[in-house]
Image (cartoon, rainbow, N blue to C red; front, side, top):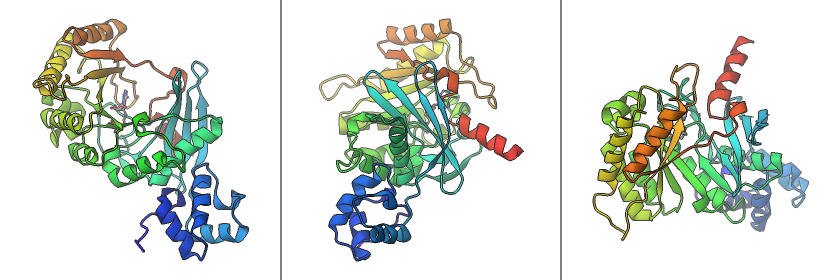
Length: 360
Ligand code: SAH
């Protein structure tokens, strides 16, 4: 028997759950009844397909640790739902359900806090408290779906935390959420966003999961990127883009680049021309796979976070930036802001909640 390293039922692979069930003196097939029920959001005592004594044994062996909804905000503008979930140890994380024409997307957190230190980001202000288990990441999808009564068709790992800094649990989550006995979301409907953790990118590319990689670039020169994203001092822009090119060669999956526009830092027409030059020369120097690297840049006007004082450029400057990229052959779209009335960008609700709690 392999050793089970997880501490909550939702984190277990089906084989591990089967081992646990057998070790409790139950027939192995019970695991096939329990796994889908867990992934619908039930705890053992709520499952009608197992006996009370099986449920009790299972709960005594390992807790489910389903988070609770601490707070929920629904946008009156576009129906975006933002959740503040309370974990078993009292820590809180955020998740967002966004409604698009092609279905619902849930944005999940991967850590409590973050230690990456990006200058514009609210999630990193208090540092990292701890990693989330695979089950705690999965529970966000399950709860958003159960609460709205709607199917979730896409997932983005763009909430609080750096997914590559919690690699093992994130990988486990990806496999669990893809499992056909559970929620069964195709890898092609999952995007993972990283601040540029090159070791993580190179490791993930070998796992052969056709997910979409999203790179938080935000600046194209090392000088500018060093200032706003400390990870750039560990892996610089050229190392990052070399890893992106290898990712594309290895997986054939496109990469999307996120670029947060911050007034006075990275958003002049000269910054746009420089960005286009860097991307074109790093990624399109030698066409391979019989095609050019499909570069797409998402432009995100920075969401003002009160602690940082950073502001977005005005609409005219944003459009000029986008047009300058297009002129150099780089497709760019300005990200539509969802849930403008509920502060839907991540990290801010958790901070607000912490501040209010510490006042009481
Ligand atoms: N750590 C991962 C994923 C979480 S952040 C990453 O860095 O990619 C998700 C995205 O939101 C990233 O692109 C991040 O740079 C961006 N972001 C963080 N704070 C923001 C803010 N105040 N305004 C706009 N985008 C922000």
